[in-house]
Length: 386
Image (tube, rainbow, N blue to C red; front, side, top):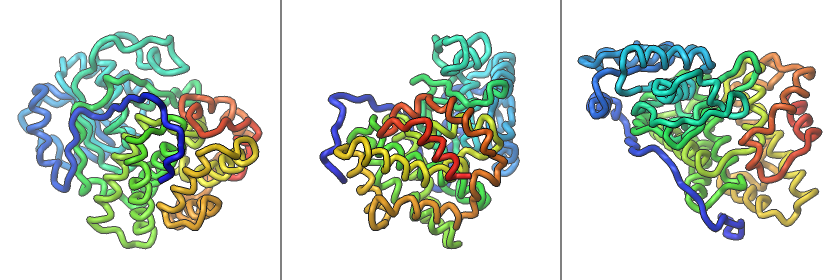
């Protein structure tokens, strides 16, 4: 790795209080949940509870079940939090993909706060801050991608604003992150592809982020290699227990890296894109990744040719087995296509949507991109991705 990248003189590092990783770890769920109480809000995707027989696994607990269909919005979080309050829940368990985990995380916070989650979202609500510790939260991902089991934010859709915004606070970090690679290994191929491309984007963006530091670097580069290889195996029909383990670990590392280093322009654009259009978060990242990377390289060479970020892109190219940074966009675009993820136009994104997406893209993720991209450059990224 490049040792010349300027490092901050100080940094913070946050992650889940306890991480349990390994095949079969789902069997430990009852004993983990019992530490926090018997009355539990269980938040899952539409199929996770039945597929994993969660009511059976958590027999003896008083369960209040909230299912999340798609990415969570304000109403879904408020409804789940209200159910937790009415049942006097003592803990929250989230089982599913990033959407279920984010909904559970937000519900754990809002169960002990008044008002709507909207009031607490970045750049949308009334600027209210969490003032009390959330209910203890246990995160059990069933996909390898979002890294939500290791982050301090929950991404929530705001339908009337056509954006997604974060509820963010250190207290949102899970008490326990239980990662069982067998669960994500059972995900349908399309889901695994979308999730995995999200994880890869986290790792790549965190490494070139202006918030990167030695601890996130130690995870980002090997994590990107693991994710790339596991996705290549998925694309080629070679996935097995070893690649599933590798992808689950890369996803966890991606969550830790993004929570501590920040992200970049891909996620800056995806926030309003995902709010306006019905496209899975991972697919949106995949569609934008190659064009955004190319735009960053061009902008850096034109306006900041001495930037250490250019050497960082070369580090990533070597880690992924790609000849040079200039070859990264083609390699990433080819991987997306081989995984069956089409371009943005296939999801209904139209040229008329681009100005609003660019206008609403200057959120927290954009602030740690290695160079400030102009509106024209961001529009060109979106146009190239259609």
